[in-house]
Amino acid sequence: MIVQQLVNGLTIGSIYAMVALGYTLAYGILGLINFAHGDVYMVGAFVAYFCITVLDLNVIVSFIISLVISGILGALIEFTAFRSIRTGSRSSQLISAIGVSIILQNAVMLTMGSDTKPFPKVMNTSVYEFTNITISSTQILIMIVALIFMIMLYFLIYKTRVGISMRSTAQDAAMSSLMGINVNKVISITFSIGAVFGAAAGILVGIYYNSIVFNMGSSMGLKAFVAAVLGGIGNIPGTMLGGIVLGLAESLGATLISAKYKDAFSFIILIFVLLFKPTGLFGKKEIEKV
Amino acid sequence: MDRIKNIKQMSNKIFSRLNNNMIFALSLFVIIIFPIIFDNSYILHILILLGVYVVLGTSLNVVAGVMGELDLGHAAFFGIGAYISSLFVMNVFDNFWIGMILAGFISLIFGLLLGIPSLRIRGDYLAIVTLGFNEIIRYVLLNMQSVTNGPMGIKGIPSPTIFGYVLNTKQQMFYLIWVLVIIIVVVMNRMTNSRFGRTLVAIREDQIAATSLGINTGKYEIWAFAITAAFAGIAGSFFAHYMNFINPNNFTTNESILILCMITVGGRGSMIGSFIGVTILFLLPELLRPIADYRMLIYGIMLVVMMVFKPRGFWPEKRIPSRITKSAESKEAS
Image (tube, rainbow over all chains, first blue to last red; front, side, top):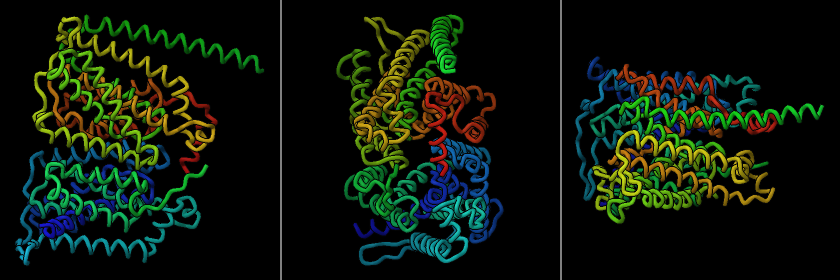
C-alpha cells in the first residue's frame, strides 16, 4: 500500500516539479512570482487538445506545436506584462501576473467553453503488476518525460552559452549587460523555457487524468509554487526535489492520515519547513545587509 | 527663507486638515442621502458589498501597505469572522453584536498566530505562508462537516438586530455597514498616523535600522497582523449576517489576492488609495456587466494596463519624504 502510494506520489511529484521549474526560472532571473504560470500550463494542455481533436494531428506533432506556442506565449507575457515594471514593486508585478492569469483563463473559456473536456486517449494504457504494486504505462510515460526534460534543462543551464548568460543575468543583470549579454533576450528565453515546461506538464496531466478544464491552472499553479518554495525558489535542483517531496508527502499523507485533507498537507508541510528553514529546504541562506 | 518655508508648510497643513474634514463631511452627507435617493435594491446591494470590501481593503492596508509585507491570506480572516459569528449567533447566543465582537476577537487570535512566522520569515516566503494559511483554513471549513456543514455552507443566518429591532432591508444594512466603514476608517487613519503606524513604516523601509533604534520589530509585526485580522473578522461577521448564507468558496485565496489587487491599484500605504482602489476594482466588474462574457477578460486586461502604466497605484502614499523614497527605490531596483 505504501509502496503503491510512493509510485503515485512520484508521478504527481514529477508533474509538480516540472511546473515548479517555471516559477523557479522566473524567480531566479527576475525575483518575480509569475502567478500566470499555472495558466500557461492550462493553455499548453488546451493547445494540444485542440490540435489532436479539431485539427486531427498526430500526438507527438501536437505536443511539439503546443510547446512552441506556449514558449511564444511565455515570452509574450514577459514582454507585455512584466518588462516595463521589472524594477517596480513586488506587488505591482504580482497584480500584473494575476491580470495575465485572468486574461488567459477567460480567453480559453470563451474560445473553448467552460465545461470539462475529455482529453483524447493518446496511448493504450496498460498496467504492469508486480508483487504488491501496479504501475500504469501513463505513469511511466510521465516519469520518463519529466526526467528527460529535467536532464535537458540541466544541460541547458549548466553546459550551454544561453545557460551561462541566464545564470549571470540571475546574479547581476546590470553587470551582465555590461559584459555584452542581451539581458532582455535572456529573460525572454527564460520565460519561454518556463512556459514550455508548464505546457509539457499540462499535456501530461491531460493524459494522466483524461480531463482538462479552463481553470485547472489555478490549483496546480498554487501547488507547484508551494513545491518551488519548499525546495528553495530560484534553485533549480532544489525545485525539482521540492516537487517530488511534495508529491510524495501528499499521497502518503492522504493514505496515512486523512484523504479529506490531502490538499491541505502541502501547505502545512510548507509552513513547517519555512519556520525551520526560512528559505526552503535547499535554498541558499540570504544574509540581510544594511 | 526658512520662515517662508515654515509658513508654507503650515498653510499646507491647515489646508490639508480642512480638506480632510471637508471630505469627511461630504462623504457623511453622501452616505446619509444616498439610500434615500436611490432606493434600488441592486445598487444598494452593490454598495453594501463595496462597504465590506472597503473594510477589508483598509485593514489589509496595515500589513500590506503600511508595513509592506505581501499578505495573501486576508480572506481567511474574513472567513473565520463570518463562520465564528454565524455559528455563535445560531447555536450559542442570539446577539449579532456579541457575535461580531467575538468574530473580531477570534480573528485577532488567529492573526497573532499568523504573525508568529513573520519573526523568522520575510518577503516572498512570508507571502506564501499567508497564502498557505488561507488554503488550510479553507480546507478546514470544507472538511469539518459537523461544524461548518462543509461545502454546503451555512444557511439562514439571522439578520442583525438593534435592541430587538431587526435590520433586514437594504437601506438599513447600507447605513449599518457604512457607519462601520466610517468608524473603521477613522480608527485606521488615526492608527497609521500614530506611533504604531510610524513604527510599521520604519520596519517597511528598513527593518535592521528600525531594530537598531530600539524597536521591537517582532512585536509590532505580530500586532499589525493581529489588527488586520481583527477588522477582517468584523467585516466577515457583517457579511455573513447580511448575506444570510456563507460557504467556503466565499473565502478562497483568489479572494485574498483580489483584495490585495484592490489596494495596490489604489496605491499601497495610503488610506485614500485603498479606498479608491477598492471602489474601482469592485465596481468595474459590475459596470462591465453589459458585455457579459467578456467582462472578466476586460478586467484582466485592465489590471495589467493599470499596473504597467501606474505601477505605484492611483494615489500612492505621500507621507515619506521623497529623499527616502528615492533611495529606497534605487535599492529595490539594484
